[in-house]
Amino acid sequence: MASLEENLSSLQKHLASFREKGVMHRIAGVDESGTKTFPTLTPIDESEICQVACGTAADINKAADAAHAAFPAWRDMPAKERRAILIRIAEGIEARAEEIALLECYDTGQAFKFMSKAALRGAENFRYFADQVTSARDGQHLRSPTLMNITTRVPIGPVGVITPWNTPFMLSTWKIAPALAAGCTVVHKPAENSPLTARLLVEIAEEAGLPPGVLNTVNGFGEEAGRALTEHPKIRAIAFVGESRTGSIITKQGADTLKRMHLELGGKNPVIVFDDADLDRALDAVIFMIYSINGERCTSSSRLLVQDSIREEFERRLVERVNNIRVGHPLDPKTEIGPLISQEHFDKVTSYFAKATAEGATIAAGGTSESPGYFVRPTLFTGANNDMTIAREEIFGPVLTSIPFSTEEEALQIANDTSYGLTGYVWTNDLTRALRFTDKLEAGMIWVNSENVRHLPTPFGGVKASGIGRDGGDWSFEFYMEQKHVGFATGQHKITKLGAS
Ligand code: NAD
Image 1 (cartoon, rainbow, N blue to C red):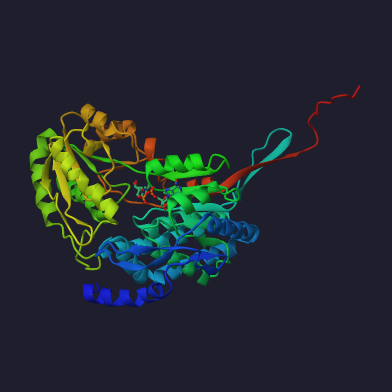
Image 2 (tube, rainbow, N blue to C red):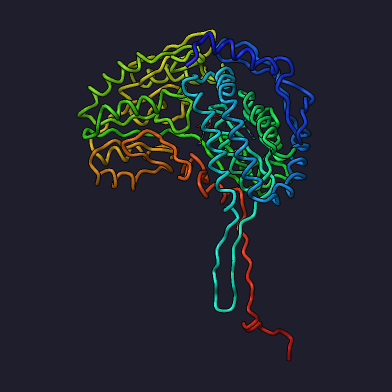
């Protein structure tokens, strides 16, 4: 793996065009500078990377018109041709994976160690959904005595994709790949804090032969560009990834135009460690699921529920490992945690240190920060209970709250006592307990004796305040497509006659 110095030198090459032109919108295959700009900063030292076009309702309108105009030809393109373009996009991503990773780390503060794989996961999303293209429209034969009923699926139309700043490239592909595979056209509004790699995605897609207007990118803030997208009458659906509060706001914004909404929202996910578990593997997974990706991860296991009988020893080992985690420059291949995304987010995450002690918890590791840059030491709170703010609110940083329990019933009660329900992780070697527990655990996704291992055909999504709808496999097409029923009569059934005699 390249050294920090080598990565920094490659980064400079990739930054050159951004420094020169800034990040522009891309609408109908054309660069648009818009009427105003805002700066994007690197969280490494808070310096400005470049200016970014700041989308307005007029920019969104132009992009929605472009997506609307491009829709019929994209929808009607033979599936094999659409598939070939998606495969070429995957190849384009693979060819530029290092550039994507370096820019993503510089823009977001995520460690290169993890981001180098995130770009490739983006390519995988395109490959997986490319392979589904040829069967996406297939339906069913539902024969009745006098009718041959068939169903088919058709793409819903132009859709809006609104994404957050944590692993922005991978999350964008996760939404955009199935939308394009379904035959929809897209207006993408990336997060204002991480605009760089969304620009690379649209560039790669067009170079791969995606017709102009099929994927359009408009940068800017949620309250202006995002809002206009959710309210636009030509946009049929919104695929959204972000905070639960924002999900609720955009649902209201989309109400007047009856938007279909897919919401992937926040989490306060429990990892439950029973005393009969493989504790070495559990320890590795607990650490990985909260401290990788800077803890800025919707599926992070931010509440550790650990059984009384093993708590002391488990927490002792945890503290030792957490204190060893390497915080540093995200482009250093040895770095495990980079700086948080922004000043605002840094202030939010670090505010929980005082809240924890004020409510009676102990800071067993971390609890410190470093500037310039938004660096936070990985933090562990012990002696907590589930009523504390640190157990209830999504902190979205490298911060773990450890809560003891004594019985299975108590663990279940604590695990479900939250407004969220995205993921749950259960560590036990008792098979029947695992069955009982997962059956009652309120979460959209649960892993037993494992960290989150994503498999694209499986459904991804949350319950309660963690979201509505599912991604992955055919579930993605259920969102981006409409079911259509057609009944062909054999001419034999009786048609009730009115006014006939
Ligand atoms: P956020 O909700 O602040 O912003 C997400 C996106 O929504 C951004 O592009 C933003 O500009 C836009 N937006 C904000 N207000 C809007 C409005 N009124 N109308 C339209 N768009 C608007 O979220 P964030 O801080 O960028 O991301 C972190 C959150 O995302 C966390 O809560 C995390 O759990 C969640 N997340 C969830 C998943 C998942 O799959 N469930 C995955 C990643 C992140």
